[in-house]
Image (cartoon, rainbow, N blue to C red; front, side, top):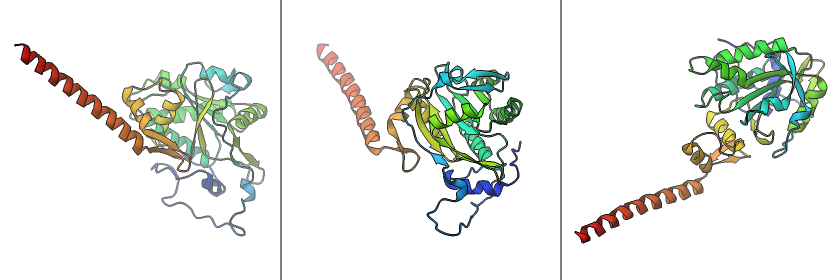
Length: 296
């Protein structure tokens, strides 16, 4: 199944400087090589279209879940944001708009590819909340987008459809409510009246079950490992098994790289602990056998 981009995609190429590497998805309309956009004038000057667009990180701050309301595409009813956090599971949040000609599609494609690569399932270990930043978009439009991405998520995978449908929410809302949420998570966007499009950054938010902003993941591709580690962090190790928690111990988020990297020191610590444990177990068995041999 192909997910098509809309018209005027060239405008969105300007936003790729905020987005990071392009998804390698075969059925996306992205070119094989990144497009080169020549910006005349001062190279340090931000293009007018992107002035004020970006991310202001609010790590550790709590979103007012009870004070923000959106319409759920599943039933067309308005609901407080807290209802989508009531499961006690971490939440992947992204702000897009459903008629976006290029960048939002790339973000959703990248996220879908990333969560498909997880052993965990939407609705079971975590939830996904996708919110439109365009107040003119309808819940019917959101439902259509949900069906497209759930179909892509299920493609070739053995997953519980009912659980996933109940765990990935596509929402719409008023300009006031959209502004509340975007301000609290630091998602700065603007509407370009000439292009009739929204300029916005490419970023995905990871929130704790209580609505605390735990991690910002940038770009249009999301590695399953980064998503897994971010969700482990947000759940404080409450999801996953012992090996997953060891993985979280060995990796650390690097802001400069905007991703997780292996910490050699922690790997050495873990290796030393395992070596000590194995050696201790061997010596214990050896000494026990020695004592038994002497008593015979």
